[in-house]
Amino acid sequence: MNITIKYFSWIRVKLKKSHDLIELNETISLKELKNNLISKDPIFIEIFKDDSVKYFLNLKELNDDDRILNDGDVLAFLPPVTGG
Image (cartoon, rainbow, N blue to C red; front, side, top):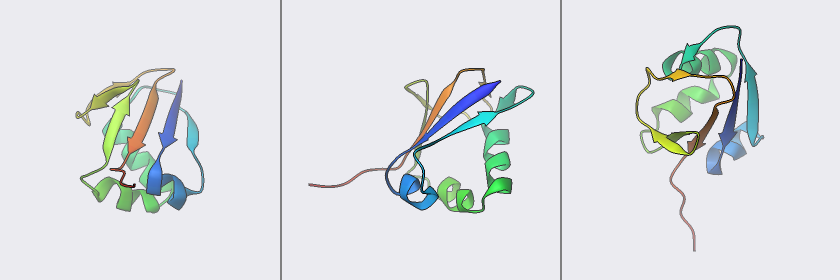
């Protein structure tokens, strides 16, 4: 099972990459994926503590950490963006 995670704004800058392709052997919830990411890189603690970051699954806002992710899903981490 493959899931693509896309990073935007300051998250992209901190991680020094625009996306990840996560390969998994079994189904996983968003909550489990977050814990998996934190175990690989502590910078995700900062990302997930920021309540202003929005999560989108296949272009639809996701508010349920218990949501099961499926093969081919695209998950995006979008912090608020400002500018002029």
